[in-house]
Image 1 (tube, rainbow, N blue to C red):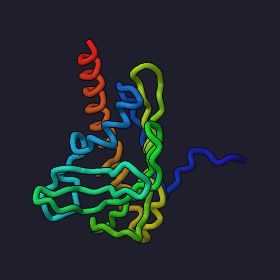
Image 2 (cartoon, rainbow, N blue to C red):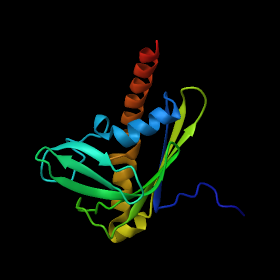
Image 3 (tube, helix red, strand yellow):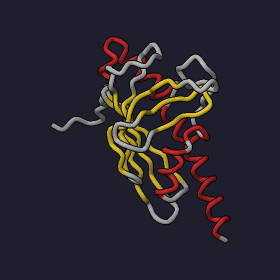
Amino acid sequence: MAEQNFIDPNKITKTVNVQAAQDVAWRVFTEKMAAWWPLANYKIGSAKAVDAVIEPRIGGRWFERGEDGSTCQWGSVIAWEPPSRLVLTWDVSADWKYDPSLNTQIEIRFIAEGKGQTRVELEHRHLERYGVRREEMRRIYDTEGDWGRLLQAFAAVAASQEGSQENDAH
């Protein structure tokens, strides 16, 4: 008998439909993160965060930049396939500190759904690496800190970028 409604406790998946072309969605996600990531609250460094950066290459860093010029790494790029797929490590511990040995992974897929439409799928996996705090972190990422809310903020900025590009073309 097939299992139904199986929820993998070691991953979270979120999907958002973006009113923007695939290349625009990719660019907003990878180059304009500070426009949609809530840096005032979603940061781990001691300085006020003013930017979030993904270096555009395999092995690149994913980090926040503080107003004082300091950086605080969140993870690194393990797959860079513009404009369709990005895989990052998320090396932020349950104590909200950078831990390069944690190595949970976030895969983001950008799927063209027609003219000016992109479905973005995010999967945060390997939550078992949080050990005894897995359920706590799963709950935070799924409902409290919520990757879904972050994706909604991203989608709003991407849609506004799509609109501004269309206006520039006319």
